[in-house]
Every structure is written in C-alpha cells, then in structure tokens.
Amino acid sequence: MRIRMLVAAGLMGISAASFAVANGEWLKKVPQAERKRLNPFAGQPDAVAAGRNLFLANCAQCHGKNAEGKGSRPNLLSERIRGASDGDIAWLLKNGEVFKGMPRWSGLPEEERWQIIAYIRSLNEQKPEGQQ
Amino acid sequence: MSVFGWRGVAGRVAGRAMTLMLFPVGILVLQGVPVQAQQEPPYFVTYSSALEEPGNLEIENQNIAATPKDANGFFASTVEFEYGVTAWWTAEAYLQGQATDHDSTVFTGFRFENRFRPLPREYWINPVLYVEYEDVSAADKSFLEITGHTSITTQQVPNATLRKEVERSIEGKLILSSNAKGWNFSENIIAEKAVDENESWEFGYALAAARPLSTKGGGRRCTLCRQNIDVGAELFGGLGTRYGFGLKQTEQYAGPSVEVNAPNGFTYKFSPELGLNDNSAAVLWRFGVSYEISQIRDWFRRSK
Image (cartoon, rainbow over all chains, first blue to last red):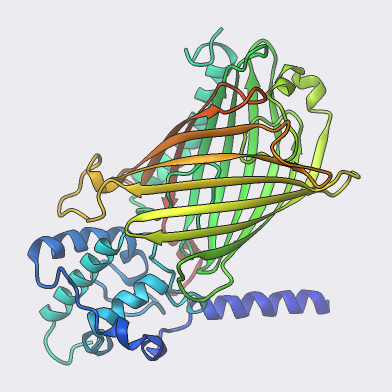
C-alpha cells in the first residue's frame, strides 16, 4: 500500500512538473552573451513564412496554432515574450526547460530556430499593445 | 523464392505487417489528428539525444531484409511505440517478428525501454541514459543492436530450434550526442546481461553522423524539399564479452542512411548496411516508416 502511494505521488509530481505553468524563471538563467545575440533573419518576410511552417509543425501542438497557448502551456502573445530579447528566446529553444515541460529543440538546425523566432516576433507585432 | 522480389513468405509477411501498421495510422490521418515534424536523425541502430516530445506518441514500423550466404533469406519486422512521458523521459515498447524463406514466420519477442536525460541544459556533448528489458528468442533477426560474439551463420539454424531459446536480459546504453552547425554526431556504448542465465556481460557500440540537406526552413509546404531530407551514416557492431573483449568473432556493419520527413506526419527511412567482416551478412536492407501523433495525452484530459 505504501509503495503504491509512493508511486502515485511520484507520478503526480512528474505530471505537475510537466504541466507547470511557465513563470518566466528561465529568463534569469540566460547568460548575458546569449541574451545579446541578434536574429540574423529579423524582419525578413521569407523567414517569417518559413518560421510559420516550422511553428505549425513543431510548436503549435502545445502553444496553439496562433500561439495563444493551450491549457497550462503558455501563450506566446504576451508581455513576457515581447520583453524578451531574440537571444533569450533562442537560448530557451536550444536548452528547453525540461523539468517544467518545455523540451529542447537543439535537434532543429539553428537557422530554423531563428526563423521560428522571427515568426513569433511577427505575431507579437500584430497584437495591439497590452493585449495578452 | 526471393525476399527482394516481394514474393513468398517474406513478401506476404511484409505486406501483412505494413497493412496492420498503416490501417490505424490511416484512420488517424483521416481524422485530422495534428502531426509533427521530427528532430530525430536518420538512424536505425544508433540513438541520439533526441527524446520524444512530452505527450506525443510515435508509432514506427522498422523492417530488415537480407539474404546471407549459406542461409535462407529473411525478413524481420519490428513495431515500436515511443511515448514522451516528460521532456526528460521517453518510454518505448517493441513487438518483433520475422519470416524466413523455406522455414516459418515467428513472433520473436518484446522489449521495454526507457531513456533519461539527466542534465538540464544543452552542452557540446549530451548524455542520455538508456535502460531496457528484453524478452527475445534466439530467432530474433531485427538487428536493433549487436552485442557479444555473434555470427550471421546462426541464421542457418531453423526457426523451430532457435525460438526455443529465449533470453531475458537487461541492457544499458550510454548515449552521447552533439549538435553543431546542423550536424548530429552520436555515440552509443552498449552493455547487456542475461537475467536468467549465467552468462557474462556482452558489449557493443554504435556510431553515427547526420545532417539535413538544408538547415533553413522553406515558406511553402513540400515533401521532397531539401530541408525535409536528412542524410547520414552509421557504424555498429559487437565488442565481445567481459572475458573476450574486442572485435574478434563479432558482426560489424556500416552504411549510409536517408530519411524523408513528409509534411503529412509520416517519416520514411532507408539504409543499406554493409557487412565489414566474414561474420556479417553482405548487406542488411532496412526500411522504416513512422508516424507521430501529437499530444495524445490531451485525448485523456478534460482541460486541453
């Protein structure tokens, strides 16, 4: 009985960690050099179009087709994302927050990760100020 | 009767396996289940540090055919269910079978495996720990890994004899993997120990490298665009046992591999693996198809 309770508690803990609402703690972990990195594709319409396809293929399943968030998985049209630098987001895509449910995307080539960032930026630019 | 002509026993089994595999997948596609591109390199034997995304289920049918010298041709099929439990833990189950020309078709066993990423960040080299339990008969011809002292001449023994010898074993792997400039480099060190027999530890290895043809995404959806095609190469084989470590009397293979990630969610892989010594088959022909179902756990949750 005790073993069953321990197993159940362990599974609940893992589940809670997996679905934990991203609280922006990851921003504090980004090294300064990474934070200053610039997106080589910033503002390029071709990169935004490519980033949209990559986003739909890899990110939309958790963050929604329009990046609006799904359940406890965060909305990417937010002040936090608007306030983060391209380098911050690039660091998160490469390293993930694996103990909070966000996988690493280091298996995608770096250029594709920058294209995704260009697309997320374009979505946030379309939203009126203050809208989450 | 030829394995490669898709005639006879092997052809029938291959057709049956593909039908069984593709029927449920076809239903999922028709239902408009969201699909996902994959980060996994085009490897059949080597593991990279890529884990399944949390909540996703990948179903893969991996096939192998060969006509070893002085033995009957065979076709072996493995169905693999891979689930992302968390972002640092992936669990898998395998079901395996094979058909041998002029012999029989047999179910050869099952495997359960878990892969864990112990470190929270991406480094220049990334370790993954792998633990597997397998219950597989000696008739297994899947070549999912090679350990210990083996020889392709074992394939001369009839299935009826081989299937009586069932080995239950625990297998561990240290997976090391690096991603740089679009390339993936992966190295696996394998150790296996039978749990119900007094056999010594057996060892093996696998090395691989791969890269997509293009490291940039494209603005239009297409199947044979360069960014959807990965190419690579694998080298793997046995390293003997604790008491006879080395390459002597082991099977060794190497070959190129190619993978196409179709936008409809299917991934196709192909590799001819060439035997590098007299203990190996001349060529192992491999073909795999997989389909990833995104966020299958949402089906069982109230809040989506």
